[in-house]
Length: 355
Ligand SMILES: Nc1ncnc2c1ncn2[C@@H]1O[C@H](COP(=O)(O)OP(=O)(O)OP(=O)(O)O)[C@@H](O)[C@H]1O
Picture 1 (tube, rainbow, N blue to C red):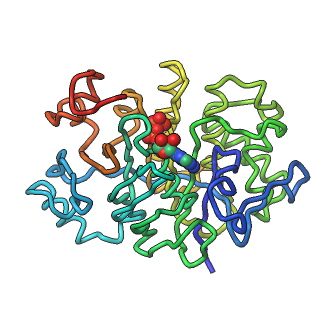
Picture 2: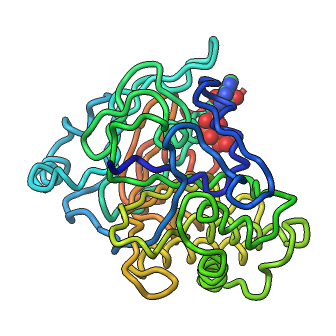
Picture 3: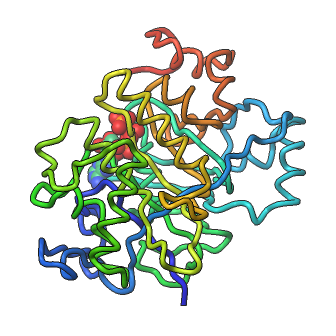
């Protein structure tokens, strides 16, 4: 039986037992080989590569969307898109439908709806604390929504990622902080899942790790500890960890990679390197060995303008618990929507109020 597979690509693996039911919790033992990483049940931790990006039909322009079902209610440009969608509905890999999430009295998500389609590079933007990371965690299955549905390739996912009824899509989550295992070498961090969850030999994994590190521009760092790397290098190690996968398997499920602020804390040039890497590992359509890869789509939560312009095609604007605007990245700076204008210009005057 194929499974829904989640890659916790840049995580300390805390979120699995941090947010969820303890019975589903992940446990990790470091560092003896084959007992390092262990997720409860049949949960797998994987990652992969690439697929060409898709630009939506020309008619798809920015829309204001206060209604949870707004994707289905927009005027002409949206209707054009709808035609395309109806024809190729199976292109939808992940759908959040009217999702709600509260933490205690804080009602963070209040009817969030959107779809991620095969080939898309989607950015999620919005003011701090508005719930962007929460959306990613819900998509990844690390958090369960209070209400609403998360559909993976059209099938509703119930609860967290250990559920077994969903198959055919891997979801990788690259966390904001470079949460590499401090006591493991770069090789061990990048090859972590394969050591545990594949039948590959240590030599095969080591070779693949070297190739994937090269793909993110790192050479000769395999034996270093994370403490010996710069912040930018750690992010690239995390990227390598997000794209590595068992390439000895005949069939590789497509993967959606979710990046939570991948350029946070980096200088402008290091940011550019990471943004272009995100784009290129998606675009290349092949893994480090030149075999067909399978990163179908990716989603980036970001605050950085350069990331929006370099690494993203379509944007979702999250504000006050909903997607209030969506459009192509190039429309972001020219939008006349008051919320978008204020956010894009960084103005203190406008509908977005900071306490
Ligand atoms: N596990 C949790 N328990 C309690 N509150 C939480 C939890 N996770 C998130 N929150 C709260 O939910 C709100 C949204 O957090 P989230 O990290 O999703 O926002 P964000 O839009 O990604 O913020 P930023 O842009 O600052 O990173 C915040 O107020 C945060 O404190």
